[in-house]
Length: 183
Image (cartoon, one colour):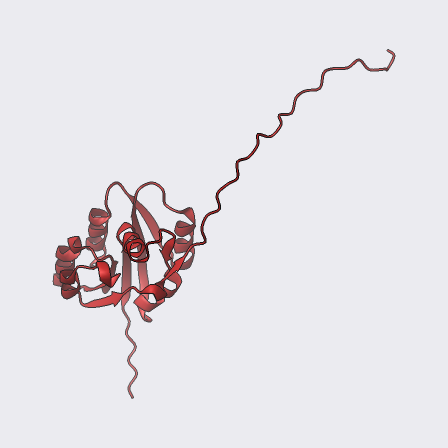
């Protein structure tokens, strides 16, 4: 058998809100998150990672997620004003001439025109998403579809609620007492 070494560079662009909502709707659990340690190697399939960018609407982005993506994949997290659609699309078009493949983590049909454009530029486009919440038209347009399954997510331990804390006693200055020393 002849062994062929595929030398492709891949950019992975994540629509964080779309993926999170999809998983939460499917599991009915807001503590379920993507396990990037299993998903990323599966998406890459021994190809080289050029960029990993996680787009997330809102200001409350987990610093642990940001740190983990940076430390493990030199990834970055980009907060978005409203939805990730426009910033992700712009970044994909900027990267089109720098990579062989772009993997978009989202099942949103808003990306259909982006997929068509990237393919017309000669970029291989792959979609990774939760099958139950993915547009069939998006799957039809992409070059390859990766189904994200329960093997690709985990459940966070529920956060403990803090007990009501009593206020700590305040330290007060001791009154000056006359010393017994004679001057």
